[in-house]
Image (tube, rainbow, N blue to C red):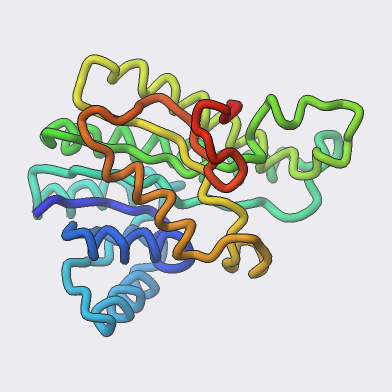
Length: 244
């Protein structure tokens, strides 16, 4: 049985991704900052008939938590086939480039960028043992420099901290894919769409099911699949047109 780790998986899109991966036959480790919340999520999926899941305490901003999660999962399996770096925060609604505090920047980058790098580095040895390892980093269309470079439309810019963190994540993904280019790894960034979850105040144009499908699609790529790409299918149906 293939295995996957999904960070931030106790609710929302992460929980849906865990559900869909389990439906595809994966054993899924649900990373959750609160183990109690993660275990409640597992019970919810168990009640739906899915049993190949386990909650793992994982706070991506805490190096000790990352190391402990790696030790726990490594004691259970020598191989990890899929890593979905889903955990993320928005940082609030007031994010002016001039007035957002450094504390806001540090907090958001700690989760959205440093957390991804920390988890990826911690689990890369288990991923290397897979014949077809896949890494999916969850980003946003709001991170696109091409989309938001129109200075004649300043209303497009409204979440400077969050958007900057996800743009940095996109660049990290490119570097990761480049370093792993001569291996079986497929490393991609995916925007799940404007999804109705707690993260968006239940506003949005996509359901969690649709968002989950967009992410899982790239976790299940075959050996001829793309790597080092950015996909935002809600906004750019043709992948070739997706601007970084």
